[in-house]
Length: 468
Ligand code: FAD
Image 1 (cartoon, rainbow, N blue to C red):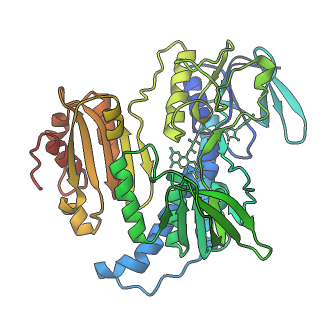
Image 2: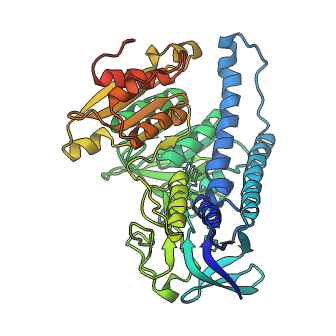
Image 3: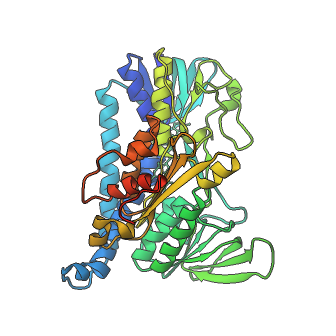
């Protein structure tokens, strides 16, 4: 029987990063993965393929709608969907192979199969052909991630009624696409298919898009997506989806508060109502690992479960279901296991929506600050007043910085705008260092860049923005 200091179950961004960090710190480490390739949801059916399609569809839209404004005259672009999917698959393969290389390079042993807890200090690896292998280990990190949340009464067939996984693989552009759920995944994939020619209708139970993000950001973002052609039905619930005999589906929608039902015909329906922790086949019950009422593995601040030697990280535990959160937890738990002081600052985890424009957010929203009774000053700067955004014709959106009214410490930053996902990084660093809005405002920002809008928003906290 092979013997390890650490066996990590699952090689998504949480698991593979944890294994590499543990190996760097001298722990004899193995990973167990049941998928054919490493990288988990993120690299195989999540972040990476969705961003590949967002990138390619944005280029398609740019060529068709905006190149002429720049004096670049091309004939009407044609969509080669097969080629676009091949571009996406190539990106996925490159990334998953990269993880395989990194695991090998760091001396991490890799086992293919379903990992199952088999009593204290033991993990059983069950291969697809039924063969099994027993690993002995001092510690186990569970990093089994999450799965698509199902809508009661709606069957996902991954052809007409699809999850995000099916929506990344559609063989043709649906004439009408109904998206159930106005969260990040629904709006990103809705944007992809709208750009490629679908009429997209988004149905959301709540009265707003991007629940959990800053309210003003949500409103402005919905307006922008509406201008781009996406239709929203908010405060509405889907009560049924019936797939037709000749393809397509009929979606039944009612007001969330009750009332008359309406039927919408769609060629495809994307169910994007969230994700749930994935622990199937893991054998949690064999050793008595506790889960909470949402099925998440319960851990303490050191990622330890109630069973000695068993830890958990990433989507399978509480917190935002984000790849970088999983990665940072992977590093933290590896460091803890090596006797160091691994730590994640949950107050500074950026959240990005990779549409056009992008949405990015870190720290507290205005709603949260009000609820917590924290007095704050808000500084806001629109991209219409930023030189680079003006010249690029990317003036939609704004930067908003929320700073403590007494100390000026930055508490939250919310951006709608081109490249917001990159812009948020500087304020995340600033927040990690406990910066004030004045610190950001007094930092020299290159001209002409979109980052100047961040500086101006910081100046606006002190009511001294220059360009508005
Ligand atoms: P996962 O990535 O889910 O990996 C878990 C792995 O464990 C899987 O490979 C699975 O096969 C394996 N596994 C499960 N059970 C077992 C077992 N018993 N034995 C062996 N292996 C097992 N996040 C972002 O931060 N940015 C984005 O842009 C983004 N875009 C997304 C787009 C889509 C369409 C989706 C679906 C998700 C997106 N996410 C994004 C979320 C992100 O993918 C997850 O937060 C992240 O993958 C979680 O990492 P993880 O390591 O916890 O789990």
